Length: 163
Length: 163
DNA sequence: CCGAGATAGTTTCACCTGTAACCATATCGG
DNA sequence: CCGATATGGTTACAGGTGAAACTATCTCGG
Image 1 (cartoon, chains in turn purple, green, orange, cyan):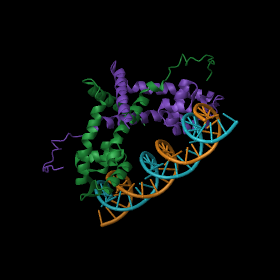
Image 2 (cartoon, chains in turn cyan, green, blue, yellow; image 1 turned 120 degrees about the horizontal axis):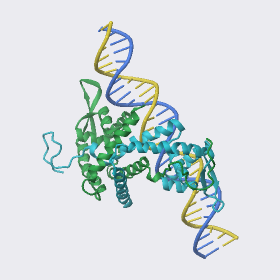
Image 3 (tube, chains in turn orange, yellow, brown, blue; image 1 turned 180 degrees about the vertical axis):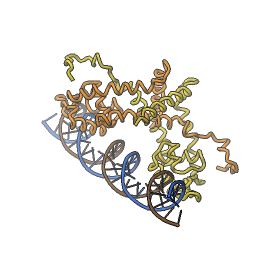
Image 4 (spheres, protein in one colour; image 1 turned 60 degrees about the horizontal axis):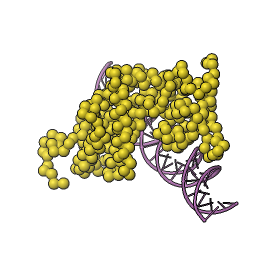
């Protein structure tokens, strides 16, 4: 790479420069982390739940009954994480396993009455949190954000697929 | 919690329901993870760099010379992570420490010639990746996304501050 | 000049996570 | 019916991570 040595401090006139603070992947991560952290505080302090447990609880609550693999697929978690989160929730009596007689390898996870109570208590908090996040948005902006996130997801997925 | 037992399957007519797939914090995390993963593949395979190393490299490359604490502040990393990433980069000869004679506790990190070479090679790849992520955006949408991310960051920060 | 904090950075420890190995059951071809 | 292969789920292991403890230096009040 035979470049004439730049004597001054100007940041590479020929090359494009990268400012981390304006770099989309970085910005996305920071925003997601900040939002997650705030949400996690909600159920961590009040319900002693971690993020994986919350995701499993939310998914089971949403679908009433689901196998671990399906939960992982839906909630973007590896089966190991689902397994551990489910074990923790079962240990605390929040979910129950219903073995599938048609296929003894799998079991459907369902909320226990205790689990349902916790679920009904958390959901409004979570929804309120999400609403307050976008409280300063103007009409239509939340829909726009969701659309753009979908575009990003699709693009990122396509690029990853070329493995 | 004296609720009349719901006999049917309809998902709680009184309560608001939560669909994970439409829940903003979840969606943000999934998108950020997908984008990060794609980007990480770039420098992981080609340069054997992890995300923390990349962030430190990018920050030092951008500011020419910076202390570990300042890097952590700028790149949203704890000082532990910065310390380890810097040690790794130093071990591979990509950065160098210049102790500050005015304050022997700190040292400025700067790129070595090798580090600069890697930096100049990565930056265009990273920029191309970011550009291709938003390739399907329509004019103005990227600016909108950035603005909305800033709003989310501010809101999440404010809510966290009430500790 | 000295001792009580504050600050930069590293190390320790306990925990979380993913990959890979593993066990049980199911399926499918012969 | 049986062995090979696939699939659901758990366990073992190795690496990354943050909170807290620690070291070294600096600053400030007396």
